Image 1: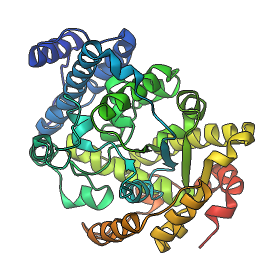
Image 2: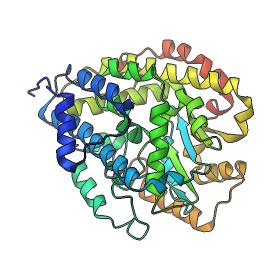
Image 3: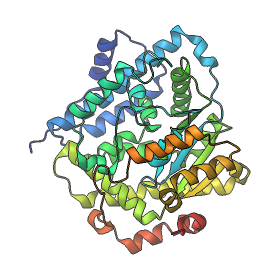
Length: 390
């Protein structure tokens, strides 16, 4: 399969976004360094024609969305008064059931999870009356099929649809400070740079974006998800002091291996053949850093424990609805009959094997199981009560 080095240029991408929207003000310049580093990292990879198109469209789409949201905020300053109350955040190692959890929480009529279509094309803000029929839903699904080249191999690892929840990294991507770019391409220099940044601008944008989305369609609370929040817990609570955090816990060897597999499948889409063994070591490094920061923060802030629900992956898989009920009891919330029936329907429509079975082994991705287990012993011991449940 023929591949080429991209020749993306920051000024060209900004000009294309401006031409597409007729807007010129991208808001605070805090996104600029991230954009420059991202473009530089992508330009160092050999990509297929599909990979070139996907990378360009992702960056350009986020710049277009940023322009629109910032312009709307300037024209509607009253949106800044929107209040975000007790948002629920789903955290946990990637591949620990976080997608299942946010899918279940999204069935609560009181919850609103940001969906892929509205984070991809957020302007104008969604309206309550047309939320299920907005033409941007069909446009997003058409784009997924035509540009992203979705196939059963990818869907077996991570389902994607316009009306499924989007992770917070999809919101952070408009600030160009997001792991979503590194999930699709092995741009480790950029990802390592993200690890070292102060994410305050990203969380500021995150809150502004939620205010934007809810300005014409409000529910009781937001249900949100991103494993990468684990390394920035202090910034999450500085932005949302009353946040309720659900953390899924899974045997780390399994989670790291599964996430390495996801990376590899996504890289293949954009780069052609990719050596599997290149995916594991850097993925393990990244997740170890996230978990160290998360464990250290939890240990340093026991006063926040009442705002956390620690969940065993095995319990979630064995009894999804019962697990959600237990979480709601802990947080003083109620599960309505409608919510419960909608969860049951969601589980029936989204069976784990709907798109095939996801199989993987550590050695496939350049990982040694025993060495990996030792590296993550600190996390396993800290949350043994959840991880050791079988």
